[in-house]
Length: 316
Image 1: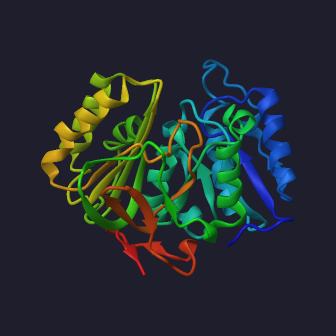
Image 2: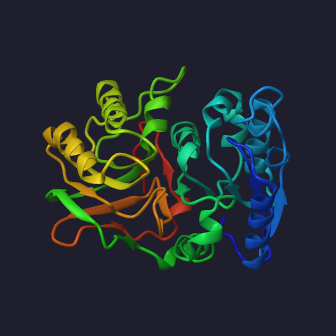
């Protein structure tokens, strides 16, 4: 399913609460793209105990599931991060959602928990993008334009880099794109009922926000010890906004991931930093770790027409 002007799209909040003025920003922005936003209850809900959650777990889970299963909804925007998406995973009805026609799902940060669930349980691609109800959509023209392009012209962008991109370990890697926010990947890797996916030949995307080097060190070792990096063909690092100095983080990643003997690139421009890219997950790509490092997509007719086998590999 492709999103076109006039389509209805869902605005859901699977994690943190939405400031009212930023919900208005999201609605107005989607309308400016010629789309018809449908605001689900979680976008305005409040949790009885936890001010860091946008409503009860069941409310947030139901919104994700109903938006995904509604054939009249062309795409699902997770419009805020924070924390809480991991709490809805066990409340989703996998069979009901697997029976629905795939559609684009957008979000980043805490929404990485959903990206992982969608690839593990449903085997469908998703989009790692800035979110509508954030200051980014108000203040960052480049990130806002990139999201619009991803939504309405997804075939027009096939490569990503940044002015600060740097090769940390040289080489070339091919594989399906996986990953997202590092701390969330660590948080979900040991989840109850999680199938052991084969990440062989995949390119891992990693970024984070407000984390110190020692915590990033711990997240990386959690993923290493769990086998998440087994067989990964390359690693692309995004931004480390409000984290420890980026050179310090890059040195850590070389120390911890360098022994894998795979290409490693830093500062590719996705994540919480300025001018953040919108990048599809679950589709085949190429990581070029060379003088001008970049991430490129392997041409396919329609990324959303592909599925993932139970092993986690992309079926053509």
